[in-house]
Image 1: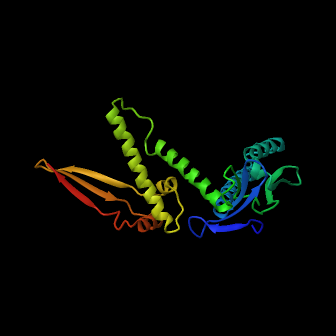
Image 2 (image 1 turned 90 degrees about the horizontal axis):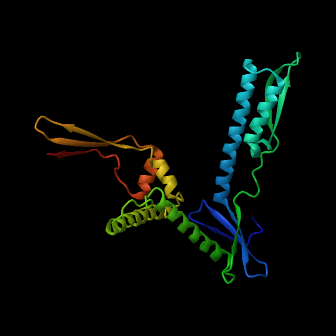
Length: 260
């Protein structure tokens, strides 16, 4: 970190980025980047993969202790299969089959070779032809491109820009207008959260809030009236945190509407 020339906070104090510009004398320059937020994310992903590897080995060890599998060649074949499945994680551990006095397998011991995080976690390189920009300006320009690409992915997927089934030009135009309007709402949500140091993007927000559901119960009475009774499930702490940051006062309010 100390070798990188610029340090600044990106999207809140929790994500500190270090950048250093390197001019290699050609038509392009390179900017070395280290994002603490990206490093935390990559290390968390690696930790989850390591946990899955350890769980698979422990399940095999439990099967050995129960007597479900006894032959050493089959045990070694299963270990080899697990190692191939979790190749990156397997390199971090030592797996040893414990044999009893009778030459039978008792269990599997697994120990960590090293527990240090990957020193390159959160590191990446930006190559740019804009040599007149400094390291921070180049990084910000790159992040603008990333945000545009992410925006198009959102519009093409969950916001429903594609496929367009309409064959009438006016309907197609209306379809695209609704998609763009939806994106403006999406962008406003992300921006409001970013002002409060919440760097979650739409996909994460959508996934988190998807567990808070709202149900409509439809009922009829003897006079032919139709009642729509809308009620929400109990919100979790993470839901309430997002609602508070977005200024939503009462998302669980029950509403009853009457129709004839």
